[in-house]
Structures are given as structure tokens and as C-alpha cells.
Length: 433
Ligand code: URA
Image (cartoon, rainbow, N blue to C red):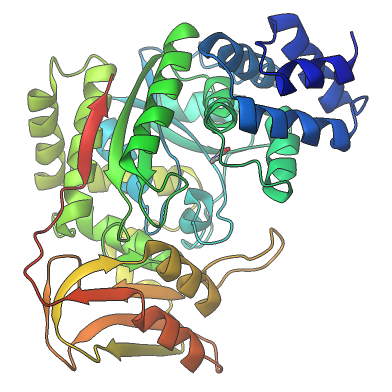
């Protein structure tokens, strides 16, 4: 088999066989196939697409390119949740403990943030001492002991995705549904859960800018998951404004704690309840989402979700007193309001701009080896649908940066006002199963 023939076949729009796709992934991971051929291949896929079988062959080859986490030592149905990446997305920190508090087995593999989106691992590490689990043995033991564990993605899991994703990032081939679907699903499937809930975001801060594209991606991933034997479902959620109010690592952890205490922002609470309810039905702990919702609501009301987060932090070596008393989180040097220069109803908040703004204030990384300031970020004071008068506070910026006025100006401009009434949008638009 020759890589050039495989590229030519895809360039001319023909479907590839399982063997051809396997040949590409094996050769690329080993280094026998050079980046220039892999780039030509991904560009051919970008333009010609892949059918369902090809996408599942690609996913299967990628997920087997490295270690597979074996969760068979955990009794019951293991559930995982994955978001395609958003701004202010701290959902795993609240939903994971809520589902575990209801008896679910939450085996969560998480990543770090890059660019305008944050990562669960970074957020967790804003609590002193927190250690991200590294081995399958620790992972399995902790899920058995307390129902929830968060493991970091290691270099041994899905090396094909690591190489391909880095290549796609610099060859303008990220925005391809078969490539995104196989990238996400291969990692999720390698991490061993039986049931997967995908939170597919759409809007200005998401990979998928429209609901239609998000639906296409969600359907593709649900099909792959099912073809490969996992109960896979998806929710389509709004990223036309940041999720909740807080954007930035420690700020988001504090918001997750507030939410588990029953004081979360409306959209975030709704997402936690909706996602948690679906996960409970996937875990067969609830017969339907109505019962699932009631169970999650109860875990918020009776504090068992918060107690589970505390247990998780303690089990992963973190200081649980930060959960009891979030005022212990260090604050940024400057906490300053941004005032509205006009009046109206908030029609849109550019999530991408807020994500980039938070990153520039110190909350994120432009390059993978940049360090982040845990206390930095943005806390919104207005959301879509809110009435704003001139001089009202739109948000608060938290930063240690001396040189910050230009960043503040860009953050101010992320709020788009309309003279007409704007209704508050729902957070979950569709469920795909
Ligand atoms: N997230 C991933 O893990 N992979 C993609 O291709 C896009 C988003």
C-alpha cells in the first residue's frame, strides 16, 4: 500500500477501506508517513468528507493507536461527559459530583485549556494540592471508592490524535466534521466509559458556529459511539454567550461550588440539571429524564453534590477547606468593573472575545507552555436578555496585569446591546440520542 494512492483516492472523492485508514494511522504514528502527506490527506478529507463507515474506521484506528484505559474493574455503568469546548464551561466540576452523589460512576478524562477555552484540569488545580491522577489503577480504585475520579490525558492515550490535532491546527483542517468527530470520539472511547454524554456547543465561542453544524457533528459522534458499542447521546447547547457568569480558573471553581450550594446562575444550573439527568438515565439510575432531573435537584438541595466534590478534592490530594470556605482562594491584584457606555437589552455577548479577554488578563495560555494566573478572569454582571442602563456594570475584570486598559476596551465591546426587548435564550436546545 502507498500513502500517495490513499491521498489520491480521497482527493478524487472515493471512500477509503478500513485497511487504508489503518495504514495511514499506523504509519503516521510510527513516523513512516511524513507530515506533508498527512497534511495532504487531512485537506482531502476536509474537502471530500468521509462517510459514516470511514469515520468509524478512523475513530477505531485512532483509539487503538495507544493505551486503552480498562475500566472493567469498576462495577456498574461508567458515564463520562465531554464538551466540545466553550467559554466559562465548568460543567464537569458540578455535574460530575452531582451524578456521583446520585450513585453514578463518573470516570472522567480531562484536558487542559488552550487559547480562549479553559480546561477542567487547570480549573481543578486552582485548589492547592490537587493531583491529577495518572494511572488506570488509581483511576479505577478511586471510582470504586467514591464514585468519581478525574484523570489527565497522558501521552500514551490516543497518540494519533495528539499528532493529527497539532497538524490540523496549523494546516487549516480543524473544521471538518469527520476529523473533529473522530478526534473527540477516539479519546473518549479510549478512556473506557460505557456511556458518553456529548455537550456540543454552538455559537460565537464554539468550533461550530451554527446550530445546524453542531447538530451534524453531534449526530456523527452519536453514530460512531453507537457503532462502537457505547451508549452515546448529545445535547446541543448555546455558546452565543459565556456559560454562567465566571470565566477563569479559580473564579469558575467558585461558581461550581456556589451552584452545588444552590446559588448558581440560571443557565448553568439548567445545564447541570439537564446534563446530569441524561447521564443518570444512561447509567440506568433513572428511568427517564424527569426522574433524573428530580434526583439532581435533590442532590443540590440536600448538599450531597457539594459533599461529593469535597470528597473528590480530598481523594485527589487537594485542600478540601477551599470547598468549605471559597474566600480562601487568592484574589487578583486588580478587580475592576467595566461600565456600559450605552443602554438597551443585551442581545449578544461575544464568547470568543470574552475567552480571549480572560486569557489576556492571565487566565489562559496562548502557547501550551505558558503559565496561567489562577485568580485571573472575568465575572459577567449582565447576560443576554438583561436590561442595561448607561453606566451599569457589564462585568468585573480580575487581573494582575499592569497594562490592561486596551484589554478592558475589547471586553467592553463584546457586549452587543439592542434597543428592543431580548428574550433570555434557553441553554439546551436539543437532545440527540
Ligand atoms: N476537540 C477535539 O478534541 N478535537 C477536535 O478536532 C476539535 C475539538
